[in-house]
Length: 194
Length: 181
Image (cartoon, rainbow over all chains, first blue to last red; front, side, top):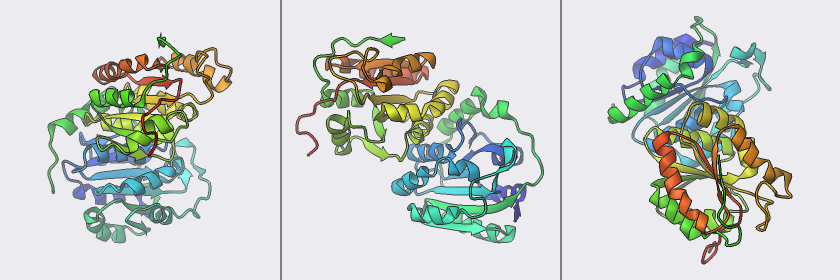
């Protein structure tokens, strides 16, 4: 099992200034603490919609790398999006699924099929070009450059346990200020490779 | 809130709806097929190189896709049936309304007779739509006749300028020369 905050810390140096990061729930709160940046997209609104927002961003900004920090419970609510994304084939699209087996911010109840659902298998079967599963931090760290360099869509499922508890700032993620910050940054900073 | 239709008698022309969408700068159509708009709108759009059609598995995906596209000033319309609208109400509530984002939807009213108004429809699933949208403070415009199609482009322009969500309610199957060939 990987500590979530350590996985996010490992991801941080690989995120370029122009990349778009879509994050939900506890992964979002942790990411905002570990890597605050204007191009973090945090206003996904309804549970399960991160992957669909990310696809919209990828369609609107195809030159940018899009990274989704999704949850297993969230993704279960929008499994059809895997097929939609697999069909559209966004080229620079890394979908990270943080699998802890529970609805962490809703009382830590188990998700249906906890431990038995093969998210990476579903992604492959839905048309993702690559999908892998990681339960050791070192293996994830080694794989990250390749995952980001690969033509998308790519999924990486991380078997995680909570790490350090970062504050859950719901007011910020739902705020107009967060959306305006992202909008301004997206339109002010042209995408560049690298 | 409700903008009344001018005439329920002449069916809207798909060509005119498509022209209006293009005039409004819409380049992406996101859709789950709807039998009301299938032959007269979705099939022609699927063959029109000026549009990119994104086929989604479920309508709430489209709400998110359209909202996210608006950040890059890419205009899109979500084309669906009222059943999909109903299934997507929480996403619309959160993403379009709470977040005040210009999600533009075009909804075929399956079950509405051409001779009846939406609110007086014999179909429960049809007549509840306007009051639900009113309760959500979501602007809606009836597209029941060909004359109504002229409302489309200005309404989409206005939605993207103000950031307000918008819902067209298509009350008759659009007709399109050539059908779905």
